Image 1 (cartoon, one colour):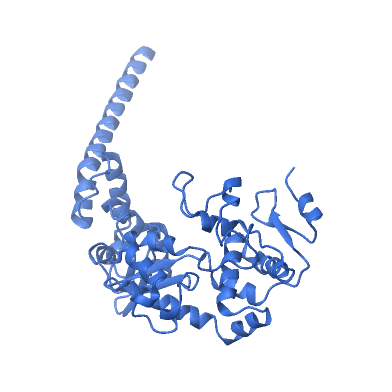
Image 2 (image 1 turned 120 degrees about the horizontal axis):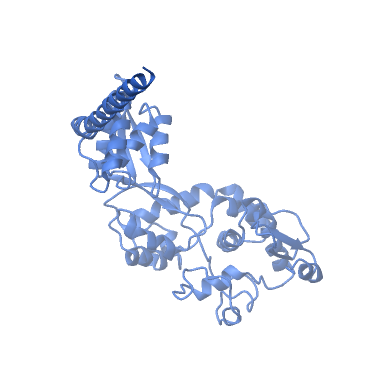
Length: 380
């Protein structure tokens, strides 16, 4: 009896396993056929770069998220402007869409964009979107629309050539050569006075994010930067520059050096004080960024701001080499941001004449009154 029972139980267990295996196989077959079919019907074809497992995984998740993707957040909502800046990631874009109340679920839209292969194809620009659209409709608009307006960004501390180098990737039909021609020969442009009478516009191209039409000219791109500079550098700053013994151009030159020297913004006013102290004492500025500007683009070392500088670099014969010449260089070495311009207007009150990078890799500087202190601040 015992043996028969064991045999019967064994057969039953095998049957259960077979049934389970069959059900598991049927479930797998159903998943492999039904999920892709439903996903295709609701969300369109997947990106060709996705493998079978990815299509199945993303498809299953999209089906769970279908209400978030197919139902508008607010049926009676109006249209609002939504800007996408150059270089924004799909994570940040979808997060901001949810924060702005345009979609229900950022994760759901991000998943769809990856599934559809759109996560790397969203163009920077200005869009008119509505919460009355479904997330899927918004995704289609971001994919299909080439906005008439886009956002052109200028970073603080960029020299004019770096701004020009970003143009081929901006969506604008302006060549670097057209841009630099206006910057370095404004007298040949149609810019208003006093910009047209300047030797160069370097230093006055105010950093910021600029909504612009795709069809604009180089002059039309540059003019808002100059107008932004005028708005930010008003009477108060100009009076403060005069109190430091500087005219506006000289202040911009010094601010451009401060911008390139400072890694931390909270040190800019202290660094400005060092240079002003040195100018007042008739000392050379001895600023590495001015030499880097004189060296220019170095393909071998890669980039405009080569570091570290060699002995040959420091000996370069240039009016911008402040290790050799006294006073300010003849022009700005970059386009400073508002904080650097304010640092020159409102420098810290210090007795410092020297500074050097700290040895802890923090990006901060050690400041010194005497040269002996300065040497002691060196890395050992």
